[in-house]
Image (tube, rainbow, N blue to C red; front, side, top):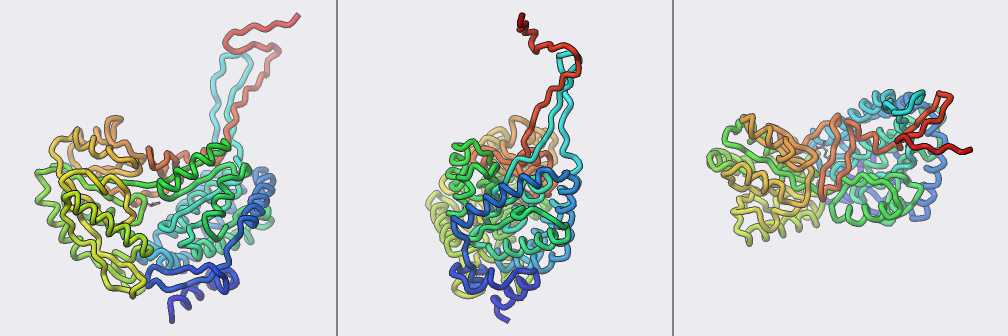
Length: 503
Ligand code: UN1
């Protein structure tokens, strides 16, 4: 069976109508072999504008549905995702090139956020606040915000939609999804799964969850429309620099989850066996194509020679292979552009004095597939390409000797997503987690930078954009807060002792 045939049978089993992915002008490809696997009919900008209108109408109805009832829809979505897990996970492997375990893990992340959101649907609490005025009560209420535009990247083609959609739906907001042009098929499949949950739920407003397949012009419709109350965008810092100001210009709200240049700091006391495994997964997993991928590693000079040669060996021996036919740990890069960006970064690293281990192309999957051996680059200093995110499996390794200085270096890049320290020293650990430590949105101890679970808020600072998605109180970004003061007395005392007596 060809890859295209397998893709077709998966899509049909997942409930996608053939006219959505066959016979259209928009080709989609699998990075596993570079083969075309879909021919979609893209949506138009006019179609996107009509979708926004439908979402705005759906909002008026959905906001009045009690939140726990909205949670029931998400509970059903979680059930349907459980039933679809094997097929959808396989489709993620086909379309994004993830290993089987990571493809399934991505669907598990969707299921987890559904479970979280179902519980949340009964916990959208506001505070009751002490008031200075007698006979008054002050409180906060949280209301649905409006349609949410979700713009996602190829690397987590379905989980990031689910992080946003599960929360938005329980918060009372319709969802408009613009997936990456590189991964439209998993988006269509996710919407088919959603449609089954919706059918089981019963009557739902039309346009509660929609997908827009096509190029950046569709994302632009969402970004520019005042009816889209929130834009939640995942992608590069370059994309965020365009989207953020445009949403702000219309006083829209945005959650930006942009680039990462995540680092690990290995201290003298570190458990090196553990650090080795954590760094290997963090830096090579998902072929270096996670926002949270470990891209820099600072190793204390006293353990450098004990750790780095072992890491170099792990890089030389890690299994690279077709994720559909093997259980290899490293699959393909998404496309040729990713491969070229990786090679350019390695050339720049050599020019900056780096010693490159690995990084060359591996002949798997044919000429249109881009498999590479992950690269470990020993750098004399944090210069050149080390300061930038290259979305490929490159780990820059540097030595350190003074703790305060390594924290400075750790924080001396534009992005601020994820970070980790490997230490058994209490002082180093606490300093890393303190106000004077890592400046990232995620700071870990004795685990890598990637692989966050959904219960925590996910996102980062500085050029990562400042947004938070997923767990903790990230839901507040999807609702509007009203502060209510209620006077149940017979007087009208003014705050701050102000007197304003007429007659
Ligand atoms: C991303 O790379 O955009 O922490 C998301 C992780 C995943 C999510 C990453 N749970 O690696």
